[in-house]
Image 1 (tube, rainbow, N blue to C red):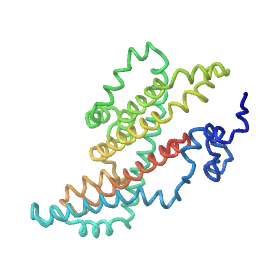
Image 2: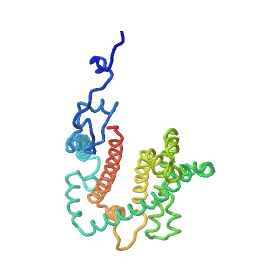
Image 3: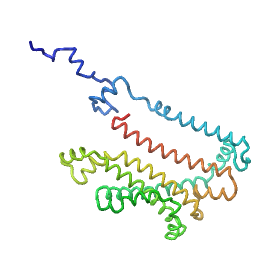
Image 4: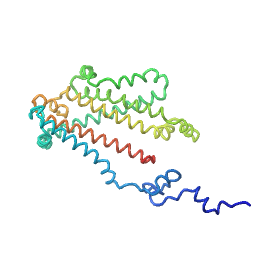
Length: 306
């Protein structure tokens, strides 16, 4: 006797996942329904509040900071170096509080950040263009593909003698080295991202009519975005290293910068303010890294990976 499975409640519940409700049914208020494995994975668990996510990510960093400060103070108490060479964290904090409100400090931060943003923007343009060309043109890949990696391993300090010969002691010398330091890392990120785009996505895109720029815009660029972002993050690290080295070597009159302040305090044997400026440089690096981390998390959330 034939059985009508459409009216069998047991079999129906076995083959059909429970319908998601509330936030499991839609994400971000966009009204886009989740189905299949996404709905099963998210059912029963909503997204955390933003302050919960911040707290969960912040406490390990705060714990690491506390451990570093404790270790630093223990080294000072051990008497390894005299206090005027290695002051404790409290003394450095007081010294930093003295210089942060000054106009010279604000001007130094503004000059350094302007150089960093300008140099990184040029490096991003060069890296993107170079990466796309090398990824899609076989002759270029064979000719300069390995050269890009070799340039990435070149210490930025090694470029400065040539940069100073070409641009003298000017902003151009610093920007020149920033671009040479960051562009290879960004290009390698673009090349890796394009190389690892699944071929099935490209075939589907072509079958749907995507060609040329449209294929890159709607298929290859979104698929390569995580690798490109990783390359940009690495490129920023190289740019920041190059900038600090450049500001230590290239001093421009009446234009203070963070790296230049390091050199000034070193010449004055002022370790109190020297370590304070080092902490400021580290803090800026952490803020930029947090920005890249937020962008990476946004991509992962958009793709249902978190």
